[in-house]
Length: 157
Image 1 (cartoon, rainbow, N blue to C red):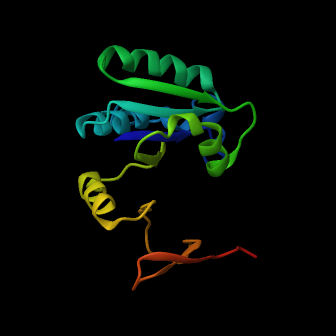
Image 2: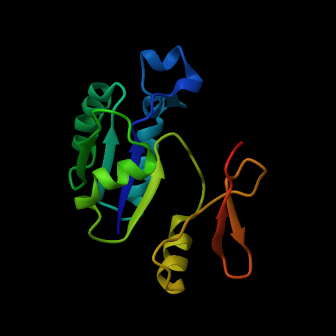
């Protein structure tokens, strides 16, 4: 199992702070969000991580070289985006990375979700993709509860 961390965004909702510091490096209780995520993944046994970068990429690259010292067995592969590609574009840009089952996670979302349960479900369900989502009005994906599959994408008008 490996992970891919989506980290290329500009963090526009947090301007002007994100003009100086990329959102994945914002501290929570003194630790950058990205460090919290990488530490959690490492504890799960994930030692191969891909990450896409764009906005303030040098700051994240410096951080990644520091974290490499803390987790010497961790293999980090970086995918630079010259222009923002969006989620699908980021995955396509890093297609050579996806050689085994991969957890794709955002670099600015912290969760206490039990990823082990997600992995166990995924490997037992015989689906090519397992997507963890929240229920809510702002969710743009419609789920068929019976088959547990995506039945439609809602388009904001």
